[in-house]
Image 1 (cartoon, rainbow, N blue to C red):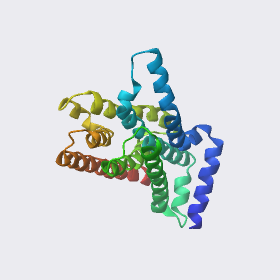
Image 2: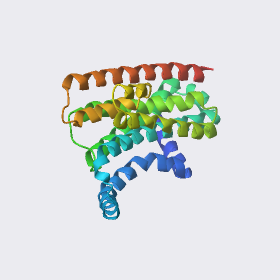
Image 3: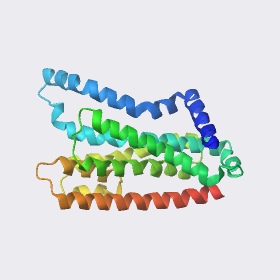
Image 4: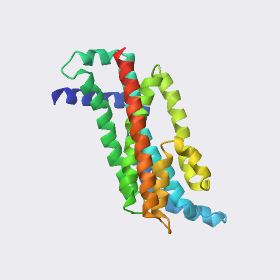
Length: 244
């Protein structure tokens, strides 16, 4: 247990030294608070000066923002791995009792655990999401994106600078929410290549008036299989990378 405490202490020190990393880490909580206490007044203000109703798009705002939470956790984990790879620390961890397996487990399990908590907090307390049983499935899909994104950054970015550039590319996957909400079926399935499409679609189907249990189950199963496949492939490529 001591070996993990040491890494946890180092992570805390890194976060204090890097304001951007600190913002990414606590961004989901800040996002929840802003939406909770700012969405209502902002909606009223916009309605008072125009005919536009922000409340009409609360479901889209929910799916868009909830996708940011695991992304922030995954980006933070990926940047930490890149930092340690740049400093050649991964090789050092490999010859300690922690070993590479322990190192990778810590680097992926901790941010995934944080993602579970932060995503659940957003869905429960943001004030814009609806409480539906399907949210459990949505949460399962969302938290799988955290280790996928962490390994994506650590695998394909050569260093932390490139990692920051790749993190902006990751933001394009939010198009999954845009397609799920605005594009009619079956054309929206084009965005099915983005893992973000499936939790967004699952949530929207779960709150729909004419929701179908079988359709919801299909979206959940397909989304889960896609996320597990991506996770397996990212793990395989990442492991080869750190073995070099």
